[in-house]
Amino acid sequence: MNKKLWYIQQLDLFKGLAKDKLQGIESLFAMKEYCKREVIFEPGDKDKVFLVKTGQVELYQITPSGKKVIVERLLPGSFFGDLGTDGDSELFVEATTDSYVCSLNKDKFFSMVSQYPELSEKLMKQLFNRLTHVEKRMSSIASDSAFQRIIKLLLNLGKKKADDSMIVSEKFTHEELSQMLGISRQTVTTLINQLEKKGLITRQGKSIQFDPTRLKQFSTS
Image 1 (cartoon, rainbow, N blue to C red):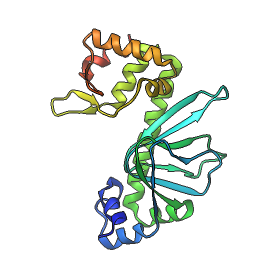
Image 2: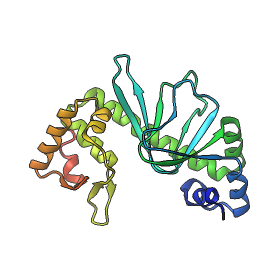
Image 3: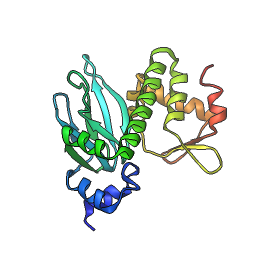
């Protein structure tokens, strides 16, 4: 089995498809390895859709004042690029770790999806979930205090554990968190320290753990 086909089989979007269908899909994609902090997509790029196979990529914008604002981070199985929106995209996308990313012409991508209804359904769910996630975070930035913003961000980034607690295991620097929240790095450091002193989070190395039920109680205070 070739390397590209093996990666495709591991992605939720393509799970359940017969091998002959997977081989047909695999032949459409071009795969490339990107080094950490290498730009994959930038404003003006058109006619391509990208699929994250391994690693992690970051979508961000640059404000008129030159400030970087992180929109979201995407894990394996996520799509980005020219998905048919009107106007030019203002997004940059770069690898935050060494990553394998596949690309496909936009028209071929939508033709592929239309052939397999199960892909279309999964893709729509993924895009809807991403849109909801981004809208909630943007709304929080516009209306919440910095303390509320960081709590809601941790709840969004956290993954459930077997004991119903949550963990943010990805290695986000305080600078990266500040770019997601629209506040200074120093403020992020202060808020993280406050949350820890209040017993609302615990830090183990680069990970942050917390009880989501307890943390939610402070997201509207």
